[in-house]
Length: 524
Image (cartoon, rainbow, N blue to C red; front, side, top):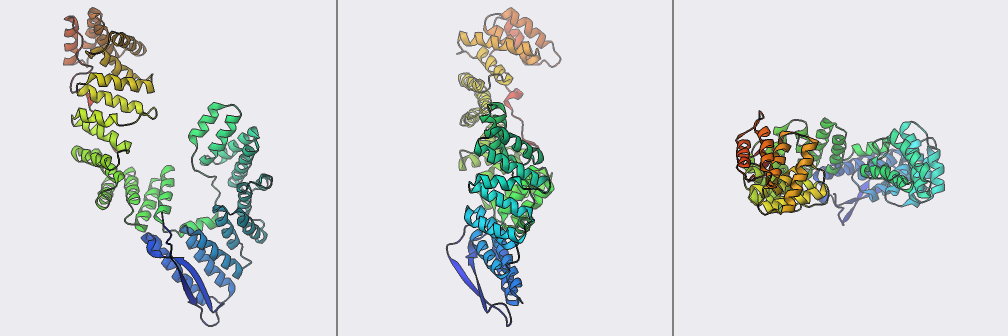
């Protein structure tokens, strides 16, 4: 984010003969603190302001110069300076509603509701039919807690689907605060039907449903909440956005385009972010990701290499480079990149998981188990971590640790077939497994085979039968497995063991594909 310098410089500008005022002054920040694109844009804006003010033939033209400078300041998040410029513009050209409107919007965003009310009301007097100004006045009343006035203002909004959605949005939020939950749900549902991208409304809608006793609808809305607002085109704010040369502004544009599936627009926005701030690692990584999604993998790789070269201490840059290397089949460099990412940020879970996968493919199973084991059990995704940890433990010869990992995974996802099968096979083959665990393994294996009598489940049930001493039944079932078209040497060896009255000695044969996690591809 841009940091506003503490030092402020007063620049005086002397007008030409006949201009509106002999001297005008503008306060600006120390531009050395800004990212390159913003610094260049603000320097140009101040220079243009100087020229425009010097040449202004009348107060209206001078007001335009001040307002234009204010829009440049607002575009780069210098709200205080923008407000000062808008106030001067309104003094010079009191008939133009743009300046009190923008001053009011800045005050509303800054939480100064009294100033917002005053300035927006002045704008409304100048442009009484402007729906956007009336919407901002309604939002001001709601933000200030004046619910009766807010309800009156939102109820009076009209002017197309966007404004209708905004009206329902406001009325619904007011109804939640007033405890009228049924009405709130109706209005908020209407707003979302008109504006599905307004995911911020999912939170108050979830609150309304929770109070109405519909916990399912409440949970669904809470899960879907986001930061999307009702899209109401505001020409002035759009114009201000177009003045921005902030990398962050372009990044946000790119993210929005990517979420909408507009890959080309996202890439263009990310390119502008890099142009605005050439050393911004987030901009470089976002551009690389956008290019990769657009299929331009070679250029994406170039940007990743640049990001790591310029920011070797950035763990996300290391992670993204590792992912590109893995997709390209560069296993050893990818593993090294993941190791570097984890060393830089031990809490970067994606890097640690991919490191575990790389270690598995390299046959470094004990290290892989350690990598997976450091990942958390915070939610259901932890079940995958425990599954991979268990596989790595099996491959390293530590069946006790594998049983513990598979058991932990099953607690997170009790009905997951892969975890059930892995646990049953390990309990059936581990020398230290208890009789109770072997008996339970047979129950689990029968459940799997009953649900789907495929080759894998048949082999699992045969293992469990042999583990419980029923070698004849195990041999009969394994003979069916060994006789199938895809049977291999390991299937024949298992059959021979059961016929000899021996249990299976491993859950899977060494080198089985289960111990080789698939590499990322360009979709992963």
